[in-house]
Image (cartoon, one colour):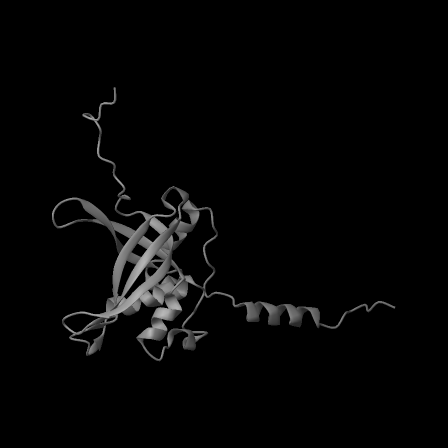
Amino acid sequence: MLNFANAKPASNIMPAGTLVTATLFVEELRASSAGNHYLNVRAEITAPRNYAGRKVWMNLMLTQASGAEPSDVGYAQIKATLEANGNDAESNPSAFEFEDFAAVATAIHGSRAELKLGVEDMTGGGQKNNVKMFISPNPASGTRQLHEQLMSSISEEPTAWPPISVVDSFDAMLAEVSQPLDNPPL
């Protein structure tokens, strides 16, 4: 005989404050009824392993004031995402410039994000996870300590800042190799 009378409800909620890495998938560029533009984004958790595969949805605001002004919060979230993918505004400002919102959506679709999760109550009961904060490895972001804590928890090295580009690394290697030898081989 099977008895389900004492079954406990399953909780798929990740605790508030959980730090995760995720891959962002832009599902749609939308405009609200107030005229503000936003990206509907799905974040698929990649680490830590015990949460891998879970999903959190969010609206990443691009404009405010009926579409007349950029959204400070949304722009900061996009900047943190670009920085988490190795971009530095000081050494490569063009990586932070886009022609339009569609180009922004293309740039962050499939990119890595570092996130701090929250928990919110849903209308009608229950709870769901939300994104409380985007984390950046850039010390000027104010979230560098969270980046280091996240990297430590998933056994990855914190990102060096400013990031070293592949081109810079290759150029440095070439400069090192092309130095004249003190004792050339005979």
